Length: 345
Image (tube, rainbow, N blue to C red; front, side, top):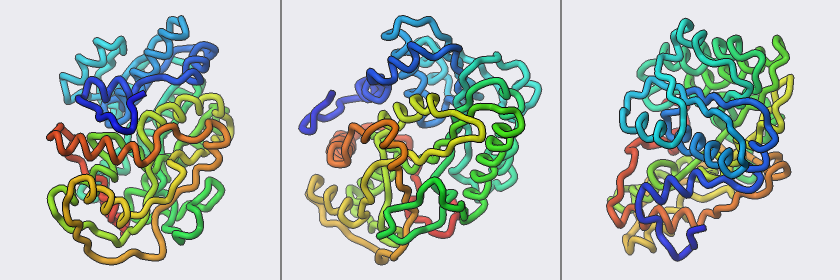
C-alpha cells in the first residue's frame, strides 16, 4: 500500500491502487456463483470496479465473465477495459430492444445515472435515473442486483446529528434528487414484485485524485479562488474502499431490497479541509459565505458493522490530492457542486 509520505505518480499507479482487491473481496468472488454485468460501466467508478472484480477472480482462481455495458463515447476506455479482460457490450441502455439482448447473468451492478447538467435536461435526467431502472429491474428479475444511489435523497440534517441513517424518510430536494429516489423505488418495486435480491447503495461521496469534493476544494485553494462555506460539512470515502463495500454488498442483497449508506466515518469541515490544502500549497485561503447549521451528511455505521472501517483515511487522501495537483496531473474536470443547497445541479 502506498504510504502517507509517498505520492501516486501517475494514472497507471492510481488505477492499480483503486482496483486492488482485498482478501474479503477475493473470498467473495471465490464462493459466489455466476458472472457479472456492470450497467453504465464508463462512468467515474465503473472501470476500477470492473478491474477489481477481474483481479479478484484471478486471485481466487475462478473463471467468471465480467461484462461492461455503455455507449462508450470514449474509445480509449473501451480499449483499455477490453485489454483488462472486460467483455464489452456497446449500446444505449435506454433502448429496450438493446437491453433485451444483454446476457442473463446472476450478478448485476447498476451504475448508470445522470447528475452533471441534470437541471438543464430534466426529461433525460428522469429517463436515466428512474425509467431505466424500471427496465433493468424487469429484465434482470432473476439476478442479484446491487444498485448505486446517492445520499442526496436525504434532507439536509443538523451537523451535530451524526448524519442521516437508512431508516430516515427520504426528503429529496430538487428534481435530480427526486429522480434518484425514483430509481430506488423502481428497484424496490422489482425486488418485491419479482423477489429479486437487491441492495441499494446510497453513496456520499466517493473521491479519488481526478474528481470529488476534496479535489474541488483543493483546486479552489490552488487557484486562489474563494471557497464557499455555505454547505459547511461533508462526507467522503476513498473510491477503492467504496468499490470494496459495493462488491461485498452482494452478500446482503435481499427481497425487499436492503439499503446501505456508504461513506466515510468523519463529518468533515469545508473550512478546515481548505486550510489543510492551504498549508500544503503554501497559499492563503479565501472564503465566501458562512457555515450553516445543516448539511447533506450520511451515517454509514451499518456498512461499517458489515465491512469494517474504510482503510484509507482523509489525511492520506488530502496528501495524495495535493501532490497530484502540484505535479499538474490530469483530472476529469467534473465539479461535484458540493456547495449546492437547493438541489439544482
